[in-house]
Image 1 (cartoon, rainbow, N blue to C red):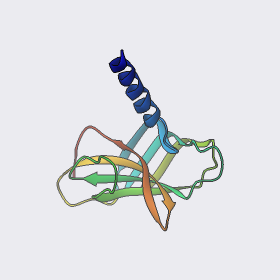
Image 2 (image 1 turned 60 degrees about the vertical axis):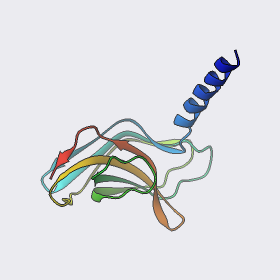
Image 3 (image 1 turned 30 degrees about the vertical axis):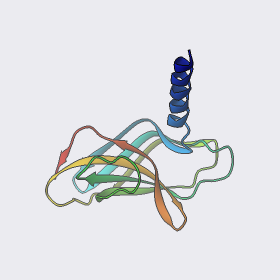
Image 4 (image 1 turned 90 degrees about the horizontal axis):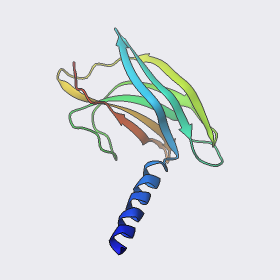
Length: 137
């Protein structure tokens, strides 16, 4: 019985942790390249904080040699766009931004879309989406 309770508590904790992000992508995200322009899109960018305003938000598309798993990201920014600040309990709907494309060195890369917030004097990744297929440049 105690084992079942511990397992249920662990599952509930993981569920709460998975959905407790203050700032996050919600829904479908994508990137598409059109020559020297990259389109970055997300169904929604949400601020789940109950009050206040976020720092400046930025979406960035990264090319990395290893799959990103959180923390500091190392790789090449191939496109980025500022979104601005977002009030608590609000969201940016249908985000779609065209940004200049910067090709990384030739090779095959994992692609990651990050949502970063400006705080403590720099942009910090607050959410990310890893894409399954590798891209060749």
